[in-house]
Length: 113
Picture 1 (cartoon, rainbow, N blue to C red):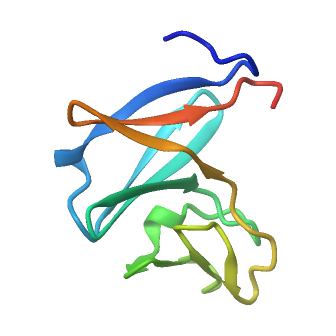
Picture 2: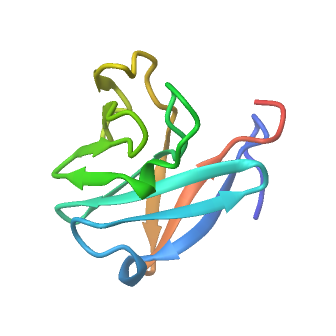
């Protein structure tokens, strides 16, 4: 796929069928682990690693738009990446998402971003 001027690229990570409403999935792109979430038919993408301590958020619990880390219970709003419950204090990185012909594409930064 063609790179944007900042070096980021749209990457197809899944299809809409792979992430049903109310579900999430984990995807690795290089050294980035990205979580996809389907919230009422809208797809959101964040880093999949908790900002408090290393744990994959997709191993946790999704309740509406809130993901709870399985390690210490920190919570994040998957729509904004905002940390909403301690011990998580730092927000998650979020990614732009688009759906093209049923494919979920995420704008992934280059390695230097």
